[in-house]
Length: 490
Image (cartoon, rainbow, N blue to C red; front, side, top):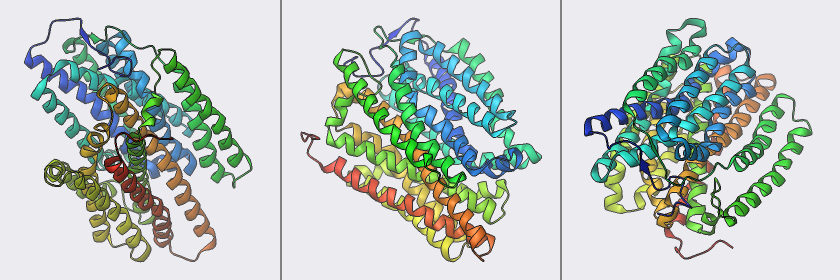
């Protein structure tokens, strides 16, 4: 594998190869960091009403609490990998875990929406620093079947974190009283401290012999472009869509142009950009990146809509709302187990079938919300379809996309896909959140519908985005699977 195009270049171990027992202990510590970073990507959804009520936050500020974490996570992820290559993955993992833990504490003591948003951005940055060390360390510590098993365990941990987040958040809020939402952040303090203490003893130091320099300019330029698009759209709704809500996003065009120009120039000079633009000459990869972006934007934003309906519209407690998501978690595990077996029998058809099953989930939710909003049995059925589809798609998607690029681009390609997952989360929450809250605000002042009907109709309309995004994801995955490998993007 070429070190020039991979965010995880060739490795050197500065200590003796650890014993098998120490390797698996190291894996447990690394996956603790993996668990909390994925958990905090989703757990905040169920706390939205509590945060809004306790901090007197606007809906736009609540969206920024969600988006700030995911955007920082995605934008700085690739440079997080290079920090480990440069300074040692053990050291950077512990530093990232320390930053994540400290930021979690700052979230837990936040006294204003602005403070919470800033702490969430810091928390996302910590996640972006520690997460790549998990991936790279597993690759160094394990080989062959043990490595596949280790990555399988990592996938299971990520699935558990994502799927139990709603229920865990509901339980913490329920038992924490009026400010129970703070516990969803403060719970990270003992976990983080234990992981750092154990990691300082068990983890060994590894680094790349020739590490790529950080591409801070690229990361900051990309972050600025994303900021110029998302923040004015969210804040514009709160201020009645003033002119700047439309003008400022236009400024992102030259910013993104400069980003592409700089990344191409850095590559031409022999550097390693955060995104290797030559990857986008491959139409299969381009289609796959678009498919992943759309799929994850549909997942995250649907959880936001349904949480708002369950708690604001139907008046359910955070715990009950979290319990309603539990069947989706079970279905996710069923799908994740069935997906590889289905793929062995039907090939890429299993991935496409999973996307269609997922699309039926938000589609049924929209239908139920519009016609029988209090029919929780049908709503749970929609969540089962949602979780089952996710479980089939997520384990198969990366392999399908990365199989269409060169081996020496696999590391960079995986990094780009991981980045687009979290950027997709940010964009989806922004689009659906603006639609949802605008519809609720308008219907509350201009409609005679009951509260639960207002929220139900708003979810039904906003969820059109989720269904359309899933269908477009299906189309792009089809292109990624069937387009000729030697085709080029003009």
